[in-house]
Image 1 (cartoon, rainbow, N blue to C red):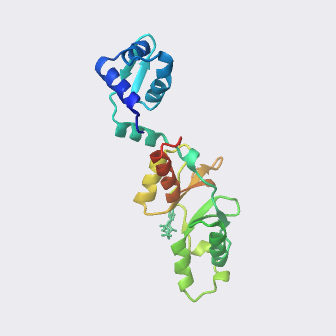
Image 2: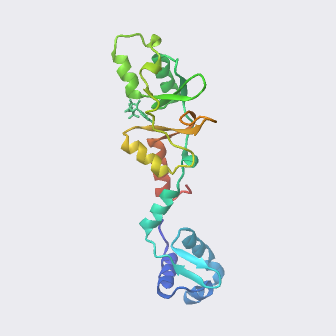
Image 3: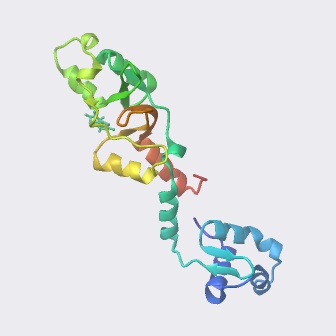
Length: 212
Ligand code: ADP
């Protein structure tokens, strides 16, 4: 976040003289307390200043990049996930290719009859299957997918940073956001999708100071 001239001056005053009240800062700048209120609110919300009742404002001591890091670590999967595109494990490779084009995604999540996560198919999985001589209409995706329990997943309440770590460390493009099915651990319902695009979008919004 870029600070304006007045916010920079307020920050300097608080650094030098804090704890200091809003009135005292206003006096030093020859402004009214009301004029300063929005700037003080921004500085406090962004984490540069802390405010204590009856004591006043003091400098948090945090640098811009520390504050950015704090903001990034607070981002959660549930606020960024997109709609998952899911196919049945009995679907053919041909149908999977059509779905990928129609839905404009790079990864499909595969579920079984109970709607439980069974696997993942990516673009390259489908390309590889297409190189063979077999009929794609007759080949079920279940024989080419990466299957459970080898699927990397994430939960709604996970941090987006952890999800990004899984994408990078496993060299994959997408993670299903899952919920454990009642009564059975390791059996998941797919409720969302986190992809490299999700992370790029969050990065873009943070950089443009949009409210993420
Ligand atoms: P692409 O095939 O387009 O490079 P990925 O890098 O996502 O796409 O996929 C690489 C391999 O990892 C594929 O074989 C795919 O089935 C598998 N894969 C993709 N997503 C996951 C995941 N969430 N968990 C485990 N394996 C995955």
